[in-house]
Length: 562
Image 1 (spheres, rainbow, N blue to C red):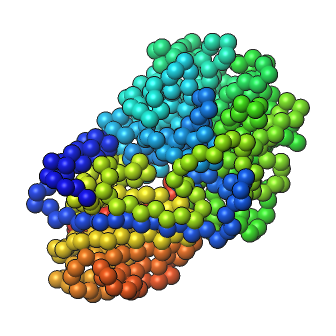
Image 2 (tube, one colour):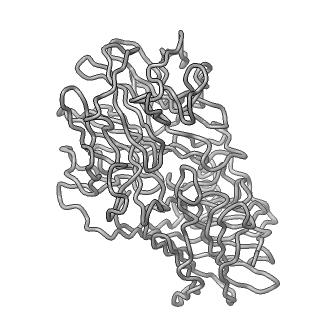
Image 3 (spheres, helix red, strand yellow):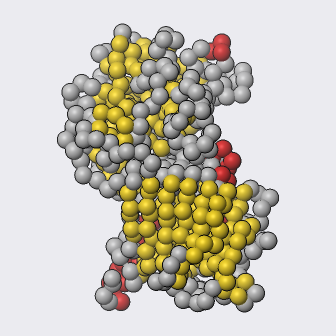
């Protein structure tokens, strides 16, 4: 708890520094106070035995992993699209347990996500290290193009973006050749007119680490993909590396859905020509050749990156998904880990027809202590630290919130979750298909105001339970939005009239069905709505590249559609 007004001010300013220039809260605004938020992840499978690890290693919306090894330390980054702060930076020493140490985009002035859909913004960051300096190259889709940021310490501060003047497309990645040269590869349209929808190319550019710009003439090194005659789609997420004097280009192919895969090429020179691995090897990772009806399936695997250990072994991080039924998953694309095998000069992450193991033998590395990021666990945020933990996020830019008095305070502002702006909403990822998220909120709403817990996939697809007042009556309302045709405040699923006072709210996720409950401060849980259809939070329904985030919100002008 904060002991003095001076410490309260210090705590608030620290939060603002961590998230950038947070909009100051209006003195006349009604404020909802959230004393705590508890997340309980529930897994219906046995925990790994000693010497084993569980996949995914980063559960929930942590897609497009990129990894680098510096000494005994591993660092990893993920995509965050239009969520802020962006690009989580992770640290590990055993490849299994990860601690988030920063967000590379932690100041609103670095990038502007205003007006963007939640699946725009930062795509597929790639992290590298050279001569004492860390680099992240990335694309801000519809908000500036390709850029480089750097840091001497991966904990930050990370620099403001340096925009790449002569690089289009998406998914840039850097390669520092042991011969002293530096190169950038990226996805872009091919030369001339694309022959079909999804026809893309991988381009190679020389890179100058001093100016942070490309130089010379760019060259197409892959046109289409492994077999151009088969019209392969969406060759992307490229990474270059070198082994035994041979250059390897690894890339994703087939799109990010259930046809996703990872493919490999090699060349004697960095500028090619690159030859694909034979069909017995390529793709080096996919799940599209397995029965989609198999139990506990893992799907959509691809977008990989490799890292070499000191013992000479190689490991891959990659994205995949865990559907609860069919192709439905609310948790988004997650980060997985597998060993890499080498044969005849080609790497393989997983042999054809092999299911991704959800439990596997751990890498031969000393254990690393870190908070849980997968499996069954409970995390309770008391909001009594100087700043929010780095996994809390907001939509596009911070607005309408502060820490103070051991609580998260949210201003009931006109900007609602469905308004495609920056609402008073602070959330964390849903990391399990089965999960329980609860909170204690103190709020006296005026007519049309609302505060509670929301589960959000994007502006057009969400579920929420909130304390509200409509027509003078205080109630708990469960709302659902399932597309642009629904009101921006959501359609009322159920409501219950209650008496005033602090109230606990709870969302219980059970695959594609969610339960919503309330309780007075010390009373038993009471149902408001059970078995609510939550497939609107799935990628299959909502589209895009993100996963569900759950957390406290406050708003005014609620559209209480019936």
